[in-house]
Structures are given as structure tokens and as C-alpha cells.
Image (cartoon, rainbow, N blue to C red; front, side):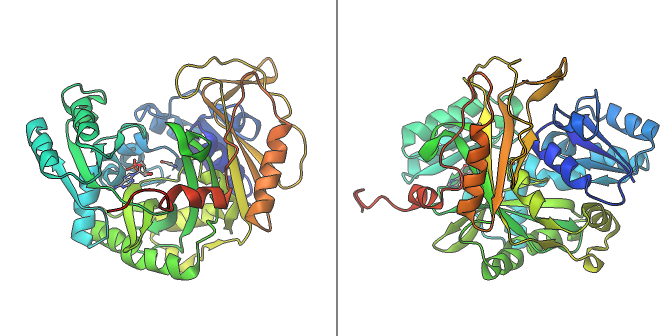
Length: 433
Ligand code: AMP
Ligand code: GLY
């Protein structure tokens, strides 16, 4: 099979690395890829968001399967265009991808499917949103309805914080049209988990879970980022929880989309908070996560090409999907100044060291005169594996020590389970009542 992966991050490098292990793979392209994918596939100089050009390239190359990594091309209807051109594509259609591209759509769908989620209200009018907030003094989460690259979410403890978030979205329009509709949500507390399952439109594979880190600094300090690290499986993950999430969250949503005539084929990603009242959905995404892919794709047992083909053909029931019991930790190394301003073009050294139980997935890298250099903010994910999470974490950080580029930084608390638990446990010193 000739395969084209769409995307250019570490998720796509991990997909390329995993697909390379498929006996059925004969040739692999990545649009547009990075310095890592260049070493195991052919990079195509076409933007992942160019939904007009990608079907033409795919046709020209005789591609048998397109695998779409990021959400933007899915939301823009890339899979629909590939379908129309007769090219099989792994990923949901534009209609089904609304589960991520519109928070209002996802919340209505969850209401219809009876899926537990926070209390919420949507507003298209700033005055109405503000007067709602005046009547509700409890902490809230304010969200821009559309795609805002992970930045359109505000955790607000006071009225003032909430009101300025609403104004930023609606009158200041800092997210453009994505903030014209605002969702005001109940503030949930508990450990957070990303859950992934393959879907063929009717059925789901067993799920796999990972935890990610969104803030820049240790202890979840600092600004939000595209993701600073991840680990899998979470310490609290077990079959009972996996079964509960499948039954109460994943299946009802897949069945509701099928009933609506817009079946979901691809990977469904649920961002879930494990609250005192059970698992509740914070968001759905229409794709693999980043940086979660870097720690869950190594867990996938079996042939990913067979599994993806089964999703497209409605044959998942006949294609068992298994996840191994190993542990993986992924540490993202970023450029100095990320997520604000940073320089690029610095040589990355130490990438070729052959350390057992480690793997490097490139994101913002490029090859320049035979050297790998930085090409953006989130540069690489360094993954370690082991029999335990502690072993995986040690392997990843050991490998990180051997890699250098000017201004490199990273979090020191990835996959440190005790440190993570302290983040969501109530502060015993805090006043109550
Ligand atoms: P989202 O883009 O909706 O996933 O939100 C980004 C992050 O904000 C989530 O991963 C959570 O950490 C946090 N978050 C979102 N919604 C809520 C909520 N209702 N209660 C508490 N935290 C939330
Ligand atoms: N890990 C967050 C995301 O992929 O959206």
C-alpha cells in the first residue's frame, strides 16, 4: 500500500514510524512532514491545510490510503474531498469532525446521547453572557466556540475574570470568528485523561488512555502550550474504567452520529475529567492527540494499516485491536521563548545516540546541509519506555540529557505520578465553605 500522511508534527512522525512497521506498506509520503519524517518517508512540499492540493497530489502519486493527522484539514473537509476523488482516507468527514470544530455541536451531541459533561450555556450576545455571569458566582470555564489552537479556554474563579474572557472573545474578537459564540461551562475538578478509540462508524475498538501536560512549566505553571509531554497508560487506568468510559461516553456518541446519518470513522479522542460523580467529557477531538500519539502509537499491537482499513470498511468487529502493557513517557523539548517569541535554525546534536528503550519524534525540525536544525517552538518529543512508568520516565530523561540545541528547555515533572496527583488533589490548607 502507498500511504500519504497529512501533517508535520511529532504525531505525524510517530504515525510514520508506526506505519513503517506494517508489512503491507510499500511507499510512504508525508505532507509536509519535518526533519524526522524526511528520514523514513518522502516529504511533500504541500501544506497540511491545503485541502485543494492534497487530493491532486494523492491522485498523482497513486496513493491507496491518506491518513490525516491534524484537525484543521479534517474540519475543512479534506476527507470529503478525498472520498469524492475516490481516494480512501482515514479520518472523519467534515460533518463528523464538528465534534471538535464546534464546541456547541459537541455539547448538543452529548446532550442528545446522554453523555455526562459539564453544565453549559452558549451565547452569541455579549450582554446576555455577562448578565448570565452576574447571576452565577461559582467558578466557570469560558470557551471560544470554534477552533482556537488550544488557546480559547479560560478558567475563571471570579466574575471579573469571566467577564474579561467573554469580552476578549466577543467584542475584542481575539480569536476572530471562533469567539463569536461563547460557551460558559461548569468548572470541573479531578484527574484528567485523554482516551482514544478507533471507530468504523458503528463499532469501537478497546480504548487506550494517556495523560498530557498543557502548561509550559513544572507544576502546571505558566502559559498554555501545544503540549509539553505525556505518558501512557495512566496510573489509575484499569479495565473497569475503560469499560465505563466506553459504555457511557464513546459508544453513545458514535451511535448518535450514526443515527444522524454522519457516521464517525477514524480515531475518536475524548478529553475526560474523572470527577466525584464519575467521568465527564471536557472535549472531543477528531484525531490522535499530540503529544499523546508519541506514547500510545508504540502501544498499538497489530498492523495499523489493517486497523485503518477496517475502520473505513466498517469491519472493526473482525479486526481485533490490542494495546500492549508497556509504559511510555514523552518529554517535549522546546525552543527558548516558546510559546511566545523564539529563534530557529539551531543545530540539534545527540539525535543519533542509540539508547535502549528510547525514541525521538521530530516536530519543528528541518534538514539543512545534512544537519538537523530547529524549525519552530516545539522541537522534538523524546520518548522512553519501560516495565513501569518510573522506568519509562528515567529512560526518557536520560536520553534528553544527551540532546542539545541552543536554548533547549523542557519540563522536569513529566510522568511523575505523585507530582501530577498533587495538582488536582484539593489543597488541604485552602479555606473551605
Ligand atoms: P478544552 O480545549 O476544552 O479541552 O480545554 C482545555 C483544558 O482546559 C482542558 O484540558 C482542561 O484542563 C481545562 N478545562 C476545559 N474545560 C474545563 C471544565 N469545564 N472544568 C475544568 N477544566 C476544564
Ligand atoms: N493533547 C491535546 C491535543 O492533541 O489536542
